[in-house]
Image 1 (cartoon, rainbow, N blue to C red):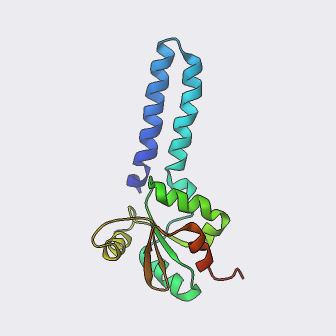
Image 2: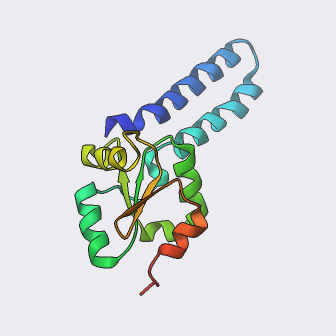
Length: 145
């Protein structure tokens, strides 16, 4: 869990340090403008923007039962954020596995990507797809009930 928050915390700490430095130099306006940018970067790179992560075993069991794809992701991944944002509300209909929180998820991604932890890796009907187009992923969703 802590590993997922390292990057967001670093963004907040760095932003605070830069803002403090600017304030001591007498440039409070620049500090006030820059600090929110770092906070936004922290939020975007945090686990807050993604749906609740579950274990790989739970995701695979749920996917087998309901036919929805499983997405393996990690915080800070630009491509994962692109997928999540472009899916919009449809993202909640997928099963999300944070590979930094689940060793079995990381192992599944390495098995699908020749030993690399390349994310997002989307499993649809048992077949892995690395960094797929968000429109394609949306098309793989079963009709909403």
